[in-house]
Structures are given as structure tokens and as C-alpha cells.
Image 1: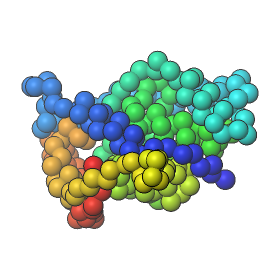
Image 2 (image 1 turned 120 degrees about the vertical axis):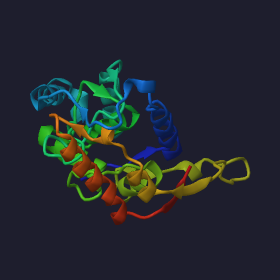
Image 3 (image 1 turned 135 degrees about the vertical axis):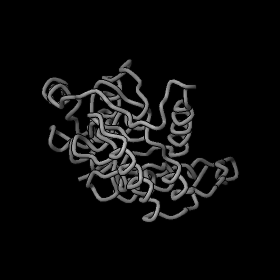
Length: 232
């Protein structure tokens, strides 16, 4: 059973915008014609950390949801910030970063991890909730990942009951919502077609030919998505 937690989604959107801005190219240090080779990882340490949370922190199993959120959020304070730390795991086609981790977060994966932990009482439940939160169909793939906050992440997780949009419940003295809505077109096809080879996050080196093939397949995912109207 999922527990709803009221989040101001506009605030999350701002955090994502900040994180996206931090991902700007760093001059000539980034080779866009080569896949990005990531360091190998093991889930053993992540699993141990999560199991320890449930075994040694009584509040992590509290039935009071705000208590769980506060306790779990505090537990990870001062953890390293890494932009885009998660992917589709070792079997991912385009992004082989881990499905979950406990040693580094960005703003979005921090929120996802805390929500998954708070809705769970053991490691296996946590892993399932992470898939459910991050992917539209619970199956890890680049295409089904909730990449865009307003049209993917917010919509999917509101429908699944993880969050409840209370943005327009904040009102002025007359009872009118104080939030101002701004929207724009989310050009998903253009986003996919814009990718360079360094967007491939792989655990081992690939040949130039393999890189080009993978990049073509990634860009071709543009055929499976459409432009959408979303909040700015």
C-alpha cells in the first residue's frame, strides 16, 4: 500500500531546473563523440546500508509517515552530490548506472530514494518502489524512465499515489490560489535527437561502430514519443 505525501511539485521542478543547469558542458573536457565509461559498482554496499536503516533505526519502520520522511531525510544529510547518479543498471542498453544507490544523490534521486524508503519496510520493498517511482511501467528502460518532471514524473507518481499536488491549495485572503501557472512545449522528440555519444553511460568501452549504432538506436526513440504541454 502506497502512502501519499504532499509535495509542492513546483519546488521539485525548480530543483530539477537547477540540477539541469549544473550539467552544462565543461569546455573541451567532454568528448561528445565517445561514450561515457562509468566506474563499476556493487549493490552489496547499498543493500547493506538500506538493511541497516530498517534494522537499526526504529523510526524507519514507523507507521507515522512524516516521522519516517524526517528520519530518512536526515540520515542522508551531507551525502555526496552527483548529478545523474542512477540509470537502468548493468543490463541497461544506453545508461548502465545503478538502479539505486546510497552513497550519492542529486535532487531528484534523493527525493525518489526517500519516498521509496518511506513506503517500504525492507530491502525488497524498497527496490520495487524505486522501479515504480522512476519508471512508468515499473520496468527499467531509458524510454519508460520519468525523465521530465512536469509531464512524466509528477503525472506518473501522482497517479500511482506517491505524491499529491497541493500547489493550488495555497490561497490568498480571498481564497484564490497564489500559484501562477506557466507552461511550455516539452519537445521530447527533439530531446532524443539532440543526444551525442557521450550520453551513453556504459560500464565498458565500445568500438566506434558500436557507439554509432547505440547512438542511432537511442536517437530513434524519438519516434516513440511526442511533444507535450508541460509546466515550466
